[in-house]
Image (cartoon, rainbow, N blue to C red):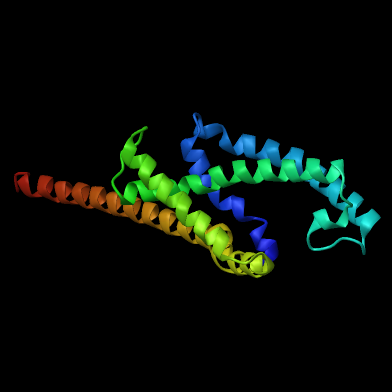
Length: 193
C-alpha cells in the first residue's frame, strides 16, 4: 500500500490533460518530465541510502540533526505539499462543482462549495492522529490509489474502446444492410422478361 501511495499523482493525468491549453502535447511533456526526474530520483536514492543505510528512520527529517539544512528541507516539503494539495484537489473540486450545478468562473456559490471542501479536508487531517498516518497512507495506497492508478484506467479504456468498436460495427452493419436492401429493391423494380 505504501509503495502504491507514492504513485497517487498518476490518477490526475487525465484531469490535467483536459485542463491544459494544448492537450495534444501532454504526452510529450510527460515523457520529458519523467526523463528529467528519474535520474534525479535514482541518484538521490542511491546517495542517501548508500551513506545512511541503517540510520534512516521512517521520518527522514528525524535522521538529520536540527539545523539550517533541516529548516530548508521543511520549507521545501511544505511548499511542495501546498502546491500538490491544490493540484490533487482540483478534480475533486470539479466533481463537487458539477454535482452541485456550480457554474465555472469566480462567484460566491463556487467559493462557498470550495470552502466547505477545505473544511472537510482540514477536519479529516486533524481527525487522524499523527501516529496513525502511516496506517492511513497504507490503507489509501492499497485501496483507492491502486484502483485509480492501476486498475480503473485499464478497465475504462477497454470499455471505451469496446463501445467505440461496437458503435463502428453497428454503423457498418447498418450501411451494408441498406446497400443490400437497396440492391434488392433495384432488382425488384427492373422490368421482368
